[in-house]
Image 1: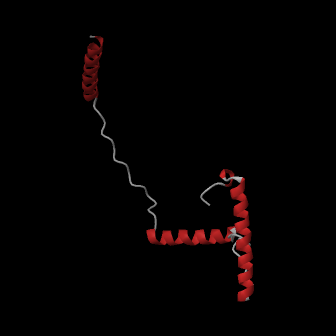
Image 2: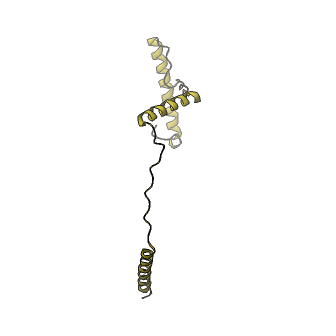
Image 3: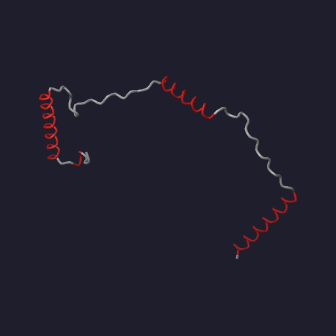
Length: 113
């Protein structure tokens, strides 16, 4: 239904109800003619949704994990060693510190102008 029921007028709702009743009566007559004992689409009750047990889900999950483990192969238990960082000498630290202080002083001088 493209329109909402609340947006329909009373006359339109009555017309919809009469059409629905006509459809149901015609389906009933057709069933009698064909000798079919099938229920109409409007009378059909939706089936209950099938629910899987927790145990079944666990078995499926375990099987899937086993398949993935088989594909990926054994895990390496040892982590690769990190590269050692190069240490900065005291002279290099002093040089860098002096350079940065000069840069910050220039920036401060520019802002105050």
